Image (cartoon, rainbow, N blue to C red):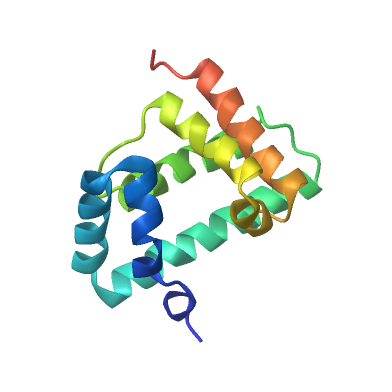
Length: 134
């Protein structure tokens, strides 16, 4: 079974609209529908690869400020930008997503539990402190 078959995009509509508004859903949904099956498979595969690489870095004790992890954070931010239909998250929004990874069980589970999700969040926060964006 492909990653796309496991992910039910439309099942998140109500939550996205409630949390971020109809425009956020419309933009993301339009992008999702327009990238086609291959694009969806590639997007979801990149999300899995990011998760796996974060977990590997964490298991090897790589500090969140290490260049390897910073590169993951930048890829992660690019991936979020794609998922938001080309809208780049502000640093504040990106940090808020990192916090959500820890506080929302679904995301924490995706990142290997609270400890893995905290590592991802801490990497995003560390990056935000050194980013050029104000």
